Image (cartoon, rainbow, N blue to C red; front, side):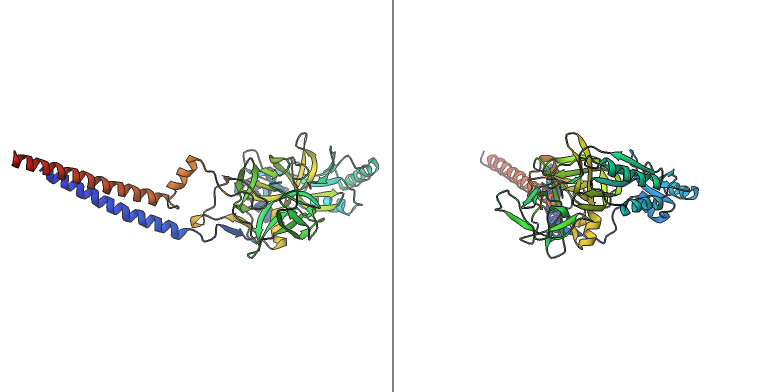
Length: 445
């Protein structure tokens, strides 16, 4: 009876092991078949940006009934409205409504008046949605007479124009993630983009005119590419065409210093109050938040409009570097005032507009099944391509092995099944040898 039970146990174990081999083989085959042929994919510039509820409500209600939106400290959207009916619609949608006096139409009319006035280098203006004001700033290079004239224009517009003097000077930030150098100066690689045939670095337009040749070293030996399709002033973006035509491995990652990188998984418009990060070759990774949108800056080289205003710092050489939040591309560094010792204001060219105008797509990672990649990774960075994913720790390796989208689980099942087969074969052999010895010892004894 005992021998019969042993045979049943062995037979069940063998059948389970064979079944495990078949299952593991199927899992491996399925995982391999689902692997994308290309590790990267372009996010279409025509795709609807991942805007939040507040932005959608402002678009739906119109500029005469709203005056912008932002996210509060808890991450909840807030919409400025000018009438009770609009407030009720905002609340029904699940957002907070704040009644304000001046509509978006009025705020934009004020900026149009400022834009039509004689240009004063060293000034900027932006829309402060939270205070329902237009903020005009002047740096230390603006003379008293020019500031007085600008103040008179502001007073003529109305009491919702706020005048502020700021320390430092509004300058472009030539000299980011990884440095790229040319005779025009030093800038930072922003995001990798593609037109479907050729790959490019998206960076700031003021970094250099079309035809500028860029290198990854200060001796001019390692050529990266050549500038083309730049727009500055007016906008502040340009493309650097890779000499090889390809961004290379890790094209979806931007460097943040100390051999670390962040995966870029999409693109969107920035929102006021949003927590953001900026990376640059001079000052590294810095964090802050979006303070205003649709900013205009009168640099010495010319006026740039439609910028994102933030309270994150930047320094010369950070120009063109990436600004992002939760792995989502938002902007490339344009310029600002102050530094990372005393703090300051930094402006960014929105990525969404640059992609639209240039007709290119953002390069992001694509995993098995089309799933978005993890928001962060580690690895050394090179200009443009930024950071291949290497140097994973044990915990991340185990995570990947147990991810059903990878071949790891199938290999584990196969290994376990093989061990079970070997074990049952060894146990059976040992039992056969023992029975053999017992039989003959009894016969010969």
